[in-house]
Image 1 (cartoon, rainbow, N blue to C red):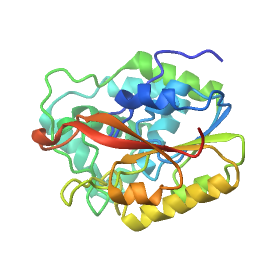
Image 2: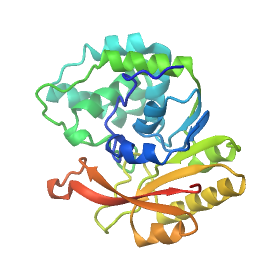
Image 3: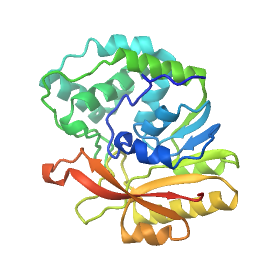
Length: 278
């Protein structure tokens, strides 16, 4: 299966890996036939690799739902998105549907996916964020011409999903890693360990991602290593993360962070890429 250059992220996502792809690709194993990504997010690495067989997981069930609708009903999804106006009143009407569970439950699967894409493309700074009740709470972005419907990319992603053997799930990351066996390459891009008390962003799902979760993830990596499974992990370059993964190969890279509600906090930051192979 040849790669299609149109296959690329359909959503803006906090911590997206598009601009880190050159560094990541330099450190990938030479041959990847089976792939697992437990924190897929915007899917930049998945869409660049386009593996023939993949386990794709994210705890954000709305995100995984978008991907399954793109796979199964992309034409209907595009048709609905083309009717959505870039208007503030419509934005808040659509955003606030999840405050009324019975109203939200009456949406079709395609309408739910279209809602996520529309809000993502038109919300402030592309910040997918939910509150503790799981309600989307980013404000309207007031963009003049947001690219709400990128039909060629949506169709290319749908074609890829249908031509490859991909298993979608929305489970705890540990569950998705339990089924991984030797011969599968695992890329891990968890919510990052905060570099300061005010920098943490885990609002892509209710509940967040604590240091206890970071430790649990490192323990999963240890188990992958014991089973002979190759993995790569991205995270912030904090002392805590470096200590957790001191037994593995740690490479520092510069990443440009464009999604932050505070403009002065956007820019180059140190991140680490960790591998259990040379």
